[in-house]
Length: 523
Image 1 (cartoon, rainbow, N blue to C red):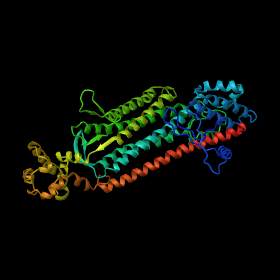
Image 2: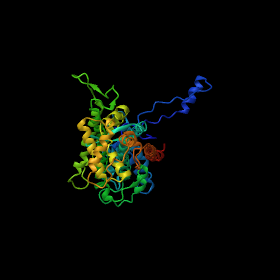
Image 3: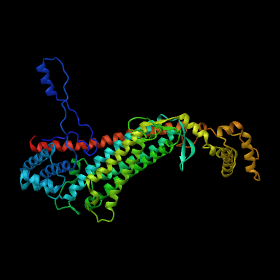
Image 4: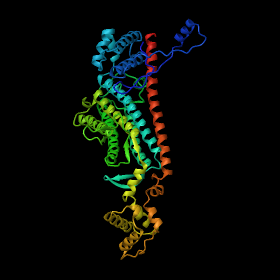
């Protein structure tokens, strides 16, 4: 009998390693033959593990049907072992190297009839291609969502750990493509991690909706056969059944690929946003963020020897664009069709959407590992422009009661004068700041003397001090960043546990099915 102790995700996505089980009996024989007092059991090379594709799930559905119906009076107990034997032969034949693995009910059933005669079709009581195909599509998409969740968690972990290395690294942040304010690089990265965290939430929410069995709903409105839908769902590792029989194959099975595509779209957009922000800085003549050279991270121009083109950034952007393109497929295919049509349900097409999301995240992970930050150059860029000027306006209002718009006008006039004269913030004369302030507030009731000492004025323009002195919950000050780092790591660990628990539940359910089916066969 074919046993499946631990079922891998579908082969169209990267697989988990198959378990390596030591054979104590073989080891004992070898020890005796060699006359050794002690030896370690060798680990046999595991055989091929069946792909969890349409063929696999049709086999599992048929196993569960045979078991349940024979035990609940819908199938003769005397006939059940014969049907089970025919089914086992079909499955074993399909698992042979290079064998055909039919993926529809109408192509799978003739093989059963060939092995066991027309009586095998008695297991088709109350079933249809509609509910069977809806069930295996959900099962396959469920596996693939866990693969996507796995890669998302890996990439998010890389992002968070990179943030942990740069709590005290102060860099420019940009709005509208222009340097805007100083920020902790860790705080910036954790902002991007928060976007990926919402993608992880979306995966878990979608998983709960997809992790439901359509089996037993037949076509549209159920059947006169008293099928045990919950027991079928349990054997196949589903958490629940689709409640409404019409919804099972006509509505929810069309919703599922669209919802998954929307998650892939969000992941791709988050990736593209991050990559393009890096590209903006990388394009400068003296960037503060670079890529480790080598491999396909960077490549030399064929004509211009000074160039180091950011190959991996280009590839990450291309991966994200491909993912968005593929994710539009289920949306367009579901648009303006009647319920239940097959247009958006193709397993291979929908698997390609998830695979594109995984590829995008995998490439982003490599980008993050290739980034090289130059804190000194970042601070130099901050001090070469007036990204800290808003702090002057904030202090004038917070500490001295000047309305923000007045304070903003003072700071704006200082910046305009400085740029006209080519003066940087580190070199701006305090006397000029006093003069501009007095001229700006002239004609108002506000004090005519700049209420900041020279030391306070200089501190207001210090990017490091600005970040350190932020008081906002969720801000870039080190204490808040450390808090957010800890919580982000906790969420990653919780998601790892959730993925392992869901995979374990499916594997345990299928193992139980195999064991009980084996008993029916007399194995």
